[in-house]
Amino acid sequence: MSWSPHRRSSRWREFQFSLHQLQRAIAPELGLEFVVRHWNEIAAALAERNRKRAPQLAIYHYLY
Image (tube, rainbow, N blue to C red; front, side):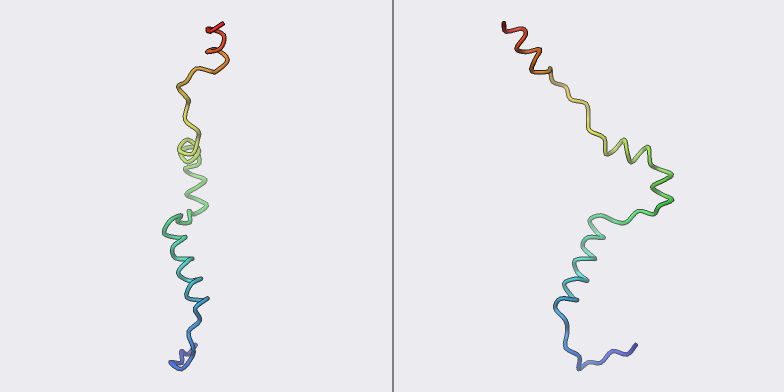
């Protein structure tokens, strides 16, 4: 593949390349083997945390 200095640059290709690089920096790709081996840790990190509040129904029950 030869590169010619007379070719016009493609702003869309430059943008696409930059966007792809930015996406990879923010959310790096994980290998399948890594994901399979660490699935439990990944799932635990993504799980919703336990809430420390009383259900609203219990609050209304005490008021009446």
